[in-house]
Amino acid sequence: MLSCLVTVLLASLGVACFSETAVDCATIYFLNSIVIESSTSYSGVLYLESPINISMTGFNQTTKIAASRGVTSEGGEWYSINVVSGSPLYAFVVFEVRICSPEFSSSLNLVREVLAKPENFLKEEWRVEYLPTDTLLEYVGTPPEVVETRVKPDFEDWLKTFSWYYRLDNASKYPLLVSVYAARFIYLSGYIQYEASLLPRTIEEVVESKKGDCDDMSRILVGLLWSYGIPAVIVHGFTAIEGFSMRSTLGTLEYVFERGGPHAFVLAYIPNYGWLSLDFLAGSLLTNHFVIWGITRSVTLSREDIEEVERIHSTVVGKQLMTVMTSQDPRIYDATSLELFINSSLGLTKPVSQTLPPSASETETRVITETVTQDQEYIAIPVLTLTAVLAIAVLTVLVWRATTLSRTQSRKL
Image (tube, rainbow, N blue to C red; front, side, top):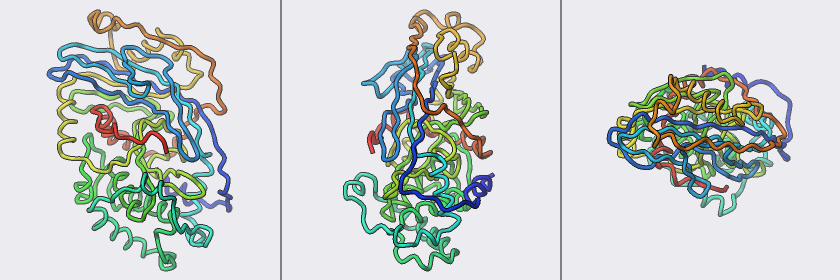
């Protein structure tokens, strides 16, 4: 399965100019809905996975609510539900997400070119003598010790199998070349075997076992890039994949994903280009649109964090649906159709009013109807069969956000 993207990336192409990057814009509607049948012992606020407003070099994302029910907003940035032990709950929110990003073909062609002709990127025009101090301070963290002492030496031993490596006088001076090959090493070389997990792992566990999912691999990749002084962040969110759907259960919560799934990948900052996607697993921002929930520099996860995830998922009984839609979908603008779709996707056999007591269903759906202006309609390109496996593992992204463990995200790059 991994060979699918490798074949795409190594495909022959002509020399491209990357001095000016074209930008594509798309409008996507992201739906997040949840039904909690009961909570045996947990009471409190749970934060729903929600798109954020963010501006980055090369692209930006803006978001606003199109429809909602039973969801509380905190300053227009965080959206939550209030869980009461022993009481059921029904809530959902639809976001209109406007995304402008570097043209997919430009980013993908750049990655292809680096992989196909790495010697071209050893030329003087690709050498970077220094990065702005504020960029280094903001987006270059301290690599975990296990990455410095074990992963980096293994990576450099792997690089020695390529003849161009011996012309590399200082790896830190070539951020584009090092970033792309580091991503290939972590995601595709087999150094870490892809293994789906419904629970997060510590970074030490991943390095020791050489097994991990997208979130695990991305945390290691960020640490590896930092060791070369390359600015990098982890992006959490929902990758759009037309035709994809799956169900998976963690504890007593069932997750339903339609037309995509939650995912995590790495962005690296490349001078004179901007932030470049290194998602060699699902092609986010290379072939597929991506709804950003958050961006973080956090690469560590404690055993206590993992135990908290297990605890919540053993006390809350329910189902959660996530999907993306387009402005052409009439369900966005009709409350009845929207709720029928949610109920059908979650397998609810009775209307909400018959399933929940008045206190849990008294809030009516609020739909905001507006004219949508867009330059490009959302089109997802399914290029990886691996994504069918990948989405299972990235439930770590869900539980991270749901238990507020990822509330240290950067808001503006």
